[in-house]
Figure 1: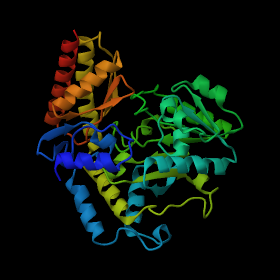
Figure 2 (figure 1 turned 180 degrees about the vertical axis):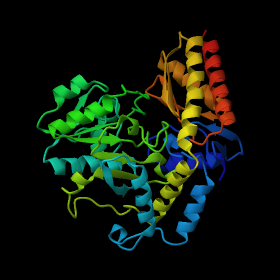
Figure 3 (figure 1 turned 60 degrees about the horizontal axis):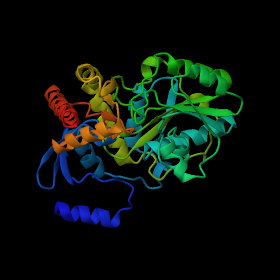
Length: 402
């Protein structure tokens, strides 16, 4: 197909859910992608945090080829055993924080969050769920209802009931809101889509302690932060918070649609046959890919590489804030999840446009912010290249508006 035909076809037959970027991407390798005309672009969005090993990584393509030649979907789906699923479960058992011990698989992060909320209500016999302002948990009607951003909720009324919203990183608000009707608290260890908001070091642990005292289950949403995105395997790990559920997706399979949720033995003991399921619940193809991705992360110590590269990049971003204090109001980040907050939305929009003009993909978030989350195995010179392009885009935006 030509670019013009590709765009016409998508615009003609797709619903209008996206404001499309006028670029048709045909292939990718590492942190680079190529359009149908052969032009190369640098990708610092990693497919919205999904392609954690970059595009078309050999470990992923080899796993797809090998498992695809065996079996992709079991007869009777999850009712039959699978060696690919068993291998992934064994690997996850090595890395998932205790006391989480049981894992079930899904096709997406929203599906994992939806299941955790549903099961928390079943286990506790309560209905209410506390979520955070500025949170994001998915686009199903249940997870949209649990998302603490008006723009993702109000146009879909009537929403699912029994959700309460409180400020993030505010233990006082949590204490006031917890009562005998609250089944679960769902929260991100770092709010990603909400603007890379990082709470106090003891926030997650103390929130878990308050939940436990109230008989409320803690659901930690690691969909964007999990699998070394912020440095450690899971962003919640260093906090030593004892979650009852943890949801996972995005980086778990490096671009293959896959998700999971983990639970404690105590929670699992209160569940029974028929409480949950799914056609693609741990299909062998997804399990094989996820196993290859996680094994690569571990064997190549990607966690340490992310910490080093993230520290370098964040230092550069902070220099820009000192250089342009009238335009850049905040820089936040941990590992390879970073955001630059500009004084107004127009500046962020213009910077994103300048980046695209330089064949460089970044993600505008919450209007005024540019979010940066490249592949976790990005090389130092590739990070330098992206930072140079972003600095040029900021400089030219400010110069044109002066």
